[in-house]
Amino acid sequence: MQVQEAGGSEQWKRVKKHLRAQLGDDVFTSWFARVDLEEHQDGTVRLSVPTRFLKQWIQNNYNDQLMGLWQRECDNVHRIELTVRGAIRPRQAPVSQPNLALSSGSKPAAADGLAEASQVTRAQAATAALGRGDTGADTPRDVLQGASLDPKYTFDTFVEGESNNLALAAARQVASGGSVTFNPLYMHAAVGLGKTHLMQAVAAKARAGGRKVLYLTAEHFMYKFVAALKSQSALAFKDTLRTIDLLLIDDMQFLHGKQVQQEFCHTLNALIDGARQVIVAADRAPSELDTLDDRVRSRLSGGLVVGIQEPDFVLRRSILNSRVAAARKTYPQFEVPEGVLDYVARHVASSGRDLEGALNRLIAHNQLTNQPITQEMAELTLRDLVRSSEPRRVKIEDIQRVVSKHYNVTKADLLSARRTRTIVRPRQIAMYLAKVMTPRSLPEIGRRFGNRDHTTVLHAVRKIEELARGDYALAQELELLKRMLDA
Image 1 (cartoon, helix red, strand yellow):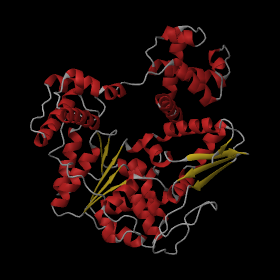
Image 2 (tube, rainbow, N blue to C red; image 1 turned 45 degrees about the horizontal axis):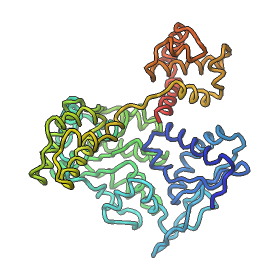
Image 3 (cartoon, one colour; image 1 turned 90 degrees about the vertical axis):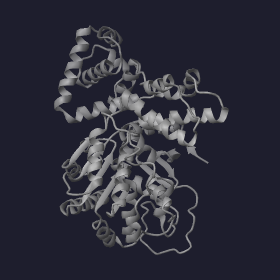
Image 4 (cartoon, rainbow, N blue to C red; image 1 turned 30 degrees about the horizontal axis):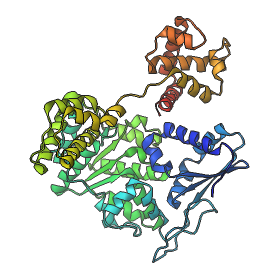
């Protein structure tokens, strides 16, 4: 039974919202989606997690961040405790190893507590896909198996367009072998724009050509390295990594932990210095990966950095044509009117993955109901996808509320005539955000900020823009506020 102070659950919701805004959706989902509030009492917050691995990871990497956010919600919080929910399934062959749990409140560990992390991260899901389940630490042979490849992800099924042609050309050159001309190759893009497709296409072609290839997600790399440390086989793990011809690391934004990052950097240096190729993919550029060590960011930036942008209408239409052609191999009678394809390409604009999802819905409707695909049916079937592709409308009231809470001032302060620095700067930032995040005019914004003149709003906007260009901390703070408002 959960025991909470009044308002504890609401405070926890706000803490999680701030965490999601600061860390991004992917990191938040990986590490905090299954964290529950058990108790908030007498200045102590007790949280529960499903596994010992997750407990240790949060304690090592996010404890200070959690404490800071809780103290913003409640001044008397002075301790955060993490416990593991339920019993851990025992192993048949327990091995005596150092206990990795940091809290005395955790329950006895099984032989390989790290294997419990298969419930937490995609890395462990990839491990399970290899057919090794919850066995002990990796042998060198296991390390070289890497994550499984999706046979659909080849160069033949990748649709080229203006937004991805440079990344495709670089990937093809790496896959063909020969001299290493740029190393590492770093590709970054938002979710669903094709970076994993290209990574796996390179891995498949290089492996077919007889090269020794290792494809891993960053979380899979972390899991293998920590498991090697635990089994006292870290040296063999390192030596095995450095014998490969091509290393591919996907989802680099999830690489956490000082020791893991140091080992990755050493591996990266050894492979590059030995003229072995490295490819890395992430959801943003190296300079924007704030959780990475400076040396790792610098090394990743030293090669070829290629961004993949959102597909334009022409590319989206080409992707749909390609997927329709593939669907007809399974469903020969499948037909989609050109007008419907144009509608989907116009309104489902965020990623290739969403386009495939939209087409799959149309296929399912057609095959399960034996009804032809029409414009009306497409609009009804895809209404949530079309709606989700529209940007969230931010209101000035939302901006005032978020800025007030972030800077610990009241909304009345923002609207008042007070000129103290602690109020003027948040007020200017709120006006700036209102200008860049809403369609409101300068006079309208001025009216919503205590009936100020539009020239006052213009001055605030220009002031914040000028300061942000020379103040990295302020620029980061503005981005944080924008993410909080978009959440």
